[in-house]
Length: 74
Image 1 (tube, rainbow, N blue to C red):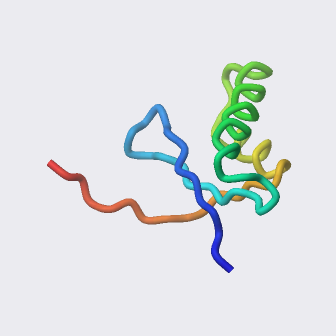
Image 2 (spheres, one colour; image 1 turned 60 degrees about the vertical axis):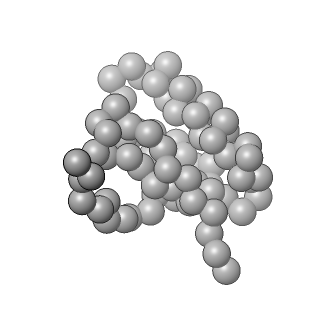
Image 3 (cartoon, rainbow, N blue to C red; image 1 turned 180 degrees about the horizontal axis):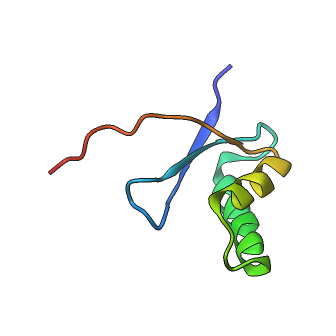
């Protein structure tokens, strides 16, 4: 079984977040759904951390995926 993955941008370009999309969410709707969750967390707590956002995403079935970012391209 293959997982659908999504790369979320970050305010720190060298720290994007990779998450697995729940199987019951269409890949085309996943980004809109995830950004809606993130916006709700940020609205509730403007000083939120990635851990707060990650917890909210996990409650909706998304999962963080560990990865190794390759070398910088100059």
